[in-house]
Image (cartoon, rainbow, N blue to C red):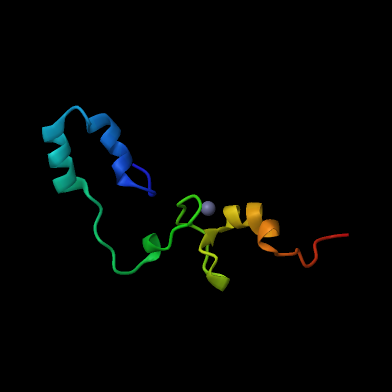
Length: 79
Ligand SMILES: [Zn+2]
């Protein structure tokens, strides 16, 4: 099971309808009101290294990839 979605498990349970019902009853993730699991990357779904500043809602890896397209400039790094 990944952090992005527990529904990915449905692929295996599609044929077994009763087991799917049981799975939904017992294995659905808890509804969160707070905590770091609510702040997921909008692009890839990671929960770690989240950047919420300027309303980005991205993880650091995605930010690194698309920062130039968003208009960010690297201030200084070497020559
Ligand atoms: Zn990401």
